[in-house]
Image (cartoon, rainbow, N blue to C red; front, side, top):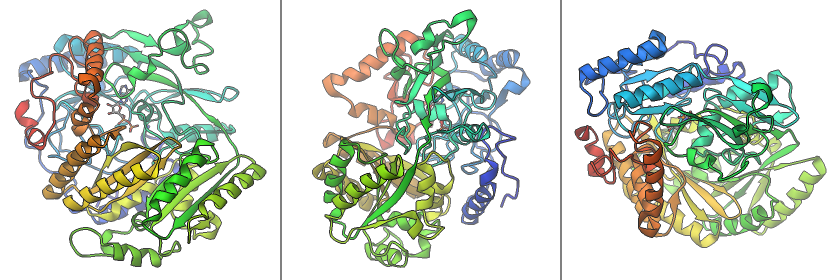
Length: 597
Ligand code: ADP
């Protein structure tokens, strides 16, 4: 077991803030205590070359890159691969590999120090026809981490040297950040300056603010839609040229940045920012965000006793959310997650094989403060005390229509209960607590299946049954987290698997593929997916003879004729790759990723 010091935020852009150092240490100890995989093992091959490049050609290209960035700016991916853990994550591969660890690896890493170095890297890639894979922090866990879609790509690790909070404007409640700024870092910076502003953070605080937003990640304050709350971008295009979007396209006075860059999103002409999210049309080097003025807040949980309460819960949430009485995007979870978030392994309750039985869930939760429940709703209200009270009165009265429901405040629950972590997250304080459920299994990794469905009881039941039945078929526990808004729900099913167990990995892939296909038949599509399933998900968005795919390909080919930028990201392939077997649309295809290179 590693006893090394976990890097702190003061020493490393991706490090842990001082206030969480002890907690991080304890989390690592717990995770490693049930790890059976070795820290690393010898590589099968020294360096995975990019496609269609000889060793000589690669060496020449790398020498040229070293001339641009210096020795420190380039690193070959030729060492043993270490999965590490959340706070000490790799930038070489997907730490939560769902196929062989060595399949989705880069050939080398480039560490630019400036936008102009990013432009030089892009020009270099065009000259040598080497695919690039930009990452900000590389903590896109559950969706592919730092792994490139095309093995042998050069990962452009933007975060290592480009990690400054460039501006915080207290009056405008906005900021401008570089790719390597984590939620932890932005939060600490605001605390240091003692500003009355909140950030919005996802469940874990180590990701990049910019990277998460362009992958359209979400958080839990009223500013939880990260992309919707961005304002202004600077983008290096695939030919190496530079673009500023929004008001940033107007030069500021005397060479300064435009003063309304972080104030008005759409500016003039087509609103193009969206094409740089979940795409491979550019490398984002700066991005503006709106921050929330700090306010009062009150988190709470409501529990429901019966499985069948599910439909009524959803139908009660819809009007409350549509009328904006619910203060944030609340979460609805199943009772089994109350066990998982305690951080104890599954074997603490059940040592049998197969699915975790329902009666064992029942016995488990009975022993917890929540008692014998089936569903739990975590919400937060915002504003001054009087408005929070009036909101809560309505919410309590609506949910009390469900017999046996129980409303609880954090003050009524023990100090180690998960709700206290929700209080932090829902008031913009980035934490690590959500890692706890990774102790469910040894060597635990996870994949998210994240379909969007209408917020109504019928559709909620359809998607839940579909997901639950298929989890049963493939032998996985169902961990549903529904992030419920007024018109749609993000149903996040978290597949937790043991990455030392090849059969579990095979089943996790099979489950994903079958859920994507079955959900699409009902008209439900994923809002985001792991890179290995990107082609299949993109294919489900096939209305009009694949009109959307064709449109994306037209943009891709116009901007990136040499196909160097993140080929295959979100199922968008440049013309030089299309129809040559790169698209992964079945298990057979997954098994032969290597054979295709
Ligand atoms: P995080 O650490 O915040 O989860 P990542 O750095 O892993 O984010 O990025 C998430 C995804 O977005 C990655 O798959 C990567 O391909 C893409 N990405 C990240 N940063 C950039 C960027 N600055 N420009 C273009 N694409 C990016």
